[in-house]
Length: 81
Image 1: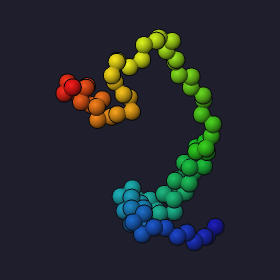
Image 2 (image 1 turned 30 degrees about the horizontal axis):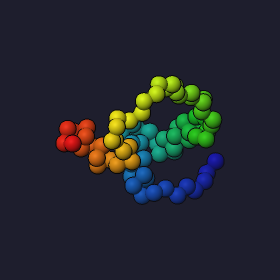
Image 3 (image 1 turned 60 degrees about the vertical axis):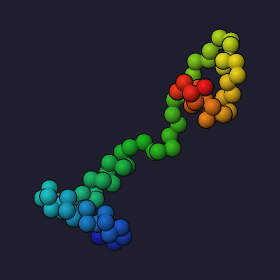
């Protein structure tokens, strides 16, 4: 079957070069690519839910540490405070 496909110029150059290097036709490369895409599961498939561990330890941040002040946190971590 014959059809028309519009490709980005850069992609078309890549396909032509790859086909030449492999000794294949552009059609065969495009067919291979489409087959690969069609055999993969859809990108929006549901992922398995991951349960993150929850710490039951108390304490929190050290006295005087404001977790919302990234500059002060960096200073403290690098020993400048």
